[in-house]
Image (cartoon, rainbow, N blue to C red; front, side, top):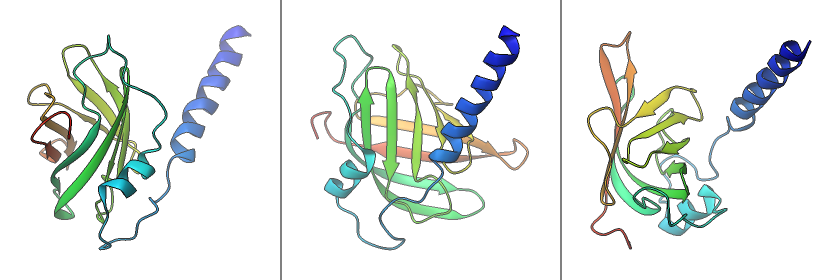
Length: 156
């Protein structure tokens, strides 16, 4: 009976988590989005834990490439609360707007896209405080969508 109850709770938790977060951001496609708006959308909820991995919180710029939908220059804002991450981008593409996940002590990242539920990870190497690249396999594992972000300094 304990397994059945736990299974139901887990199913409800994961189903609710994915469904509850499957919504469009407040900004509209093709609308100019400021870093302040991205910061507000990311819903800052905590401070970076000193014992956590490299700090990636803050404002970033880069390129979102969705193999089946196009490529777009984006701004992104990352909230880091210890090992937990939220990444919000300014894209008007079909997905790649918001990611939830974790960063490890060696700076590898595993997130999921809030729209598709697909995993995105630091497939080709770990992030740094000034470079972050996450990827998702698409088209029956024959291609990779990518979000490549940069900033000039961690304090940016």
